[in-house]
Length: 77
Image 1 (cartoon, helix red, strand yellow):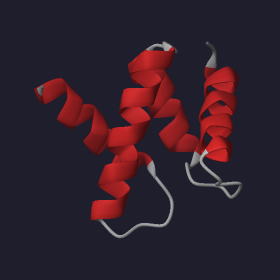
Image 2: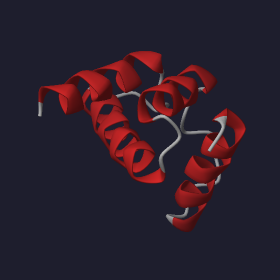
Image 3: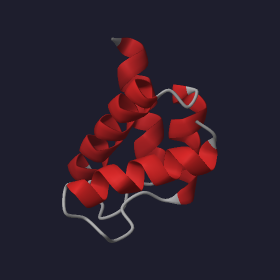
């Protein structure tokens, strides 16, 4: 997937979960795409970790810092 397809992919999954609002910043999507190389499974894993990191920091939007924390967490595994 390219970056735009990754953004759509994430938004569609969030919509299936009942979220229509913006939950990922553009920077977070770009980092998720870049790190996951546009591969759906990698994007899913990174997005889930980024959501967890944002929740732990009590953020309402997944930002680049939360996405970077996800990258670090998954790289450590």
